[in-house]
Length: 108
Length: 465
Image 1 (cartoon, helix red, strand yellow):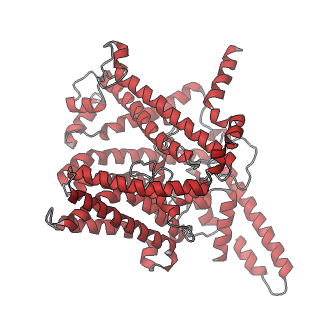
Image 2 (spheres, rainbow over the protein chains, first blue to last red):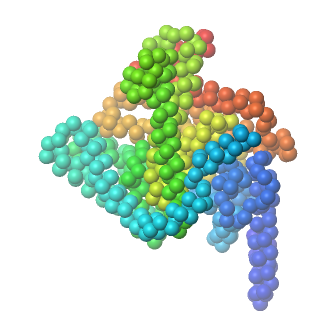
Image 3 (tube, chains in turn purple, brown):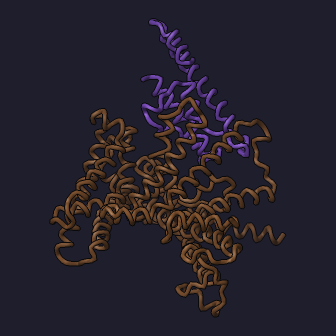
């Protein structure tokens, strides 16, 4: 798991390395998320990508039902426990908000 | 050549709210620049107090049917109690993290339990047993309007988004000047604060969007009057004289139910479909008023109804028909169930969550909506209002669950298999199936003085049984 990778290299006196790995890890998570979104995007969505801030549903990339698949993805790959914290559709609004959620949950 | 010119002209007129020159002109107007988000919110805050006061007096008067001084005194007291309840809930939302664990875990259930305790107190006291009983029943009659709105405020607290907000940031959607039913159009603070127009240009854009919706209200109202005069021969339709007594004279669905369906089968089926169109126009016109006014105040929120009659799946129709009701069911019933139960059984998880929303949640919402018999503990009346709805909600939930599972299966398939066949005939076929599903289940949604078994017998006659 990506989370485990950060913990295994987090040693004292390796500040730059940790920051570098954290950045790489964040980039990897973002890429994983984009790859996943491509598997659930609407079949008729034009293939021109989407920026991080745009609403996934309003932009037409996914339909509202696909949010449930994002929840399952986050439960399985990031070990986020929605039973405890509840599902806030605002957290799943855009790529940025999902990444923020993952970052928040990694810290807790 | 001519059709493309006409199409372009139509687009320009229909999409006037996206005309950049018009937006630029409007955003330079002094009143647009001066009507800042803070000023708009202040107007809405004052409007909320007036709307709350008027709404409470209206509800109380409608029940008592009296205009004596005592009734005014009680209604005024009820308003103050309600304001105190809303303010207490605001404090709960703002200081959510400091609440006891049991409340933090299930804030909505705790709030609803308080409402049911209030009802128990009213039911257990003899009727009209003094001023306190009158006040309590007044509060109970008003709470169904506030309960979901306050629920959104609690959700905001639960999600940590209420901290640092003022009472003014919440009151305006709890007693909104744009009114609405017990369903809050525009949802609550989280959604509204995200969608507020911050610049004159964004406000001008949103304002024009609001104007467009209000124009659509006029159009849909006209079409409904046309239907009333031409199809139903409704004597109350102002357009009836235009047709000089000519009309198809088709019955409304409630008339069919009242008559025991003693009509030819094609007429009944035609009426079922027309009822669906009528209901859609009605809900669209109502919803466009709410969202239109919201947009005039700078909230760029989704329409309540968006072309549901073009939906190609049941779940898409439900999403487009009454968006804010669906959102309410999603946020208060579907998502909590989905997050907690059957997490390792993907299909069962969806089915249970759909039934929690479209069946349990839907029934519960309408139970609270039947506030008069509920407060009066008139179980017979409640059953006559809601008995058939049990079947309606069950069929609706079943249809949505199947539609969701089918859609999810389709999404999982790679390449072209994932795309619905997009030919005109196939598309029309899918739309017709959706119309038929909702037209048929609506048979159980129309209030009529029939027992369940009588209605079931009539229902079977639709299929020649």
